[in-house]
Figure (cartoon, rainbow, N blue to C red):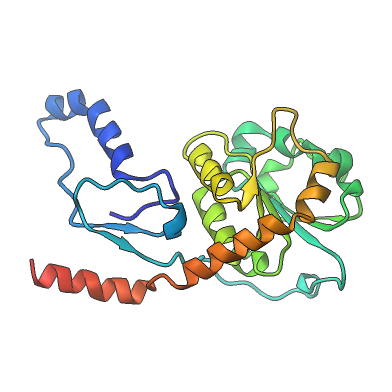
Length: 245
């Protein structure tokens, strides 16, 4: 079994199995079989995986981007910070844009180029944007985050781990599903912050972008991830485990 972010662990599977025990009996099926091993793609210093005796195999997280055509504006503007903002593909369609209302209201006061990733089918509530905000439908996040100074996002596992892999600080909303667990892991390691109940302000974001401690810790974690075994190495190890029973 492979972890997905910080929230998919044996503890969570036990909870689901317990909740579904009546359904298992009703349909005459047994609980999921015991796993041969757990593959943990989270940085070792941030892992919360509590196994139940199964081997835990550490593996480097590799961001997946798909294909893309390079565009001129992707080049960084000299001496200008770059901030990425994304709520993923599902959350803005389900919950609206309240979490990023500050982009429309006060992003012009943020001393940075802001790239707002928002799917075309989630823009019905979008108002006019300040000149320093560029609206995009899709981005190869792994490539883009490598050249960014900060990332504001909903807290999905992919975005969280991709930002850690890139070594950049994060502001994580962490609402719903596994996102609170991912957000808490980022904050406890010193790689980012969670906004308070009052939400985000331009002043808070400018302070965040200038926080050297967050950046240095994020870079430490990126170096840690780079030292983890790559998927090819782990695949060989799994084959050897199967061959030897």
